[in-house]
Image 1 (cartoon, one colour):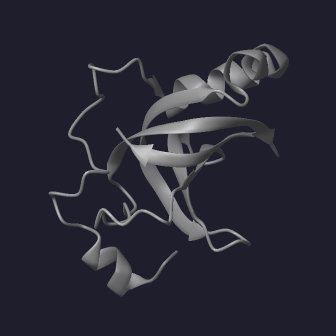
Image 2: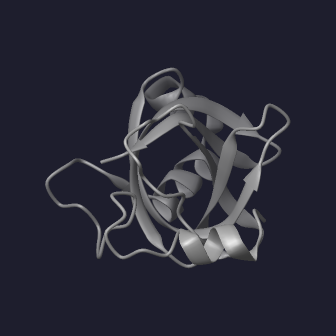
Length: 127
């Protein structure tokens, strides 16, 4: 994780990353739906999502930094071993806080396929 101080600071209810429920104004998938599509047929899911815009809503299961220092969210699907990985844009000067574990977020991302059993999303921004 990113540490307790960062998590405590990121819990502001006004954060644009946080949504109360699934955003019905955009065509979004839940993290569980995206994971299921990749689990059922990865090549078909790649044809639909890889290198294309993807909108996803999910509950943050974990927050980490990847090898490049980018913030990586793992979105829960309801099963601890089945998550969607979403890297959020770090170079965003809008003052947004980083989501914390347990928060529900809606993101617009670019699909990057599947890695070690998990769908991967990059360049995510809040919807």
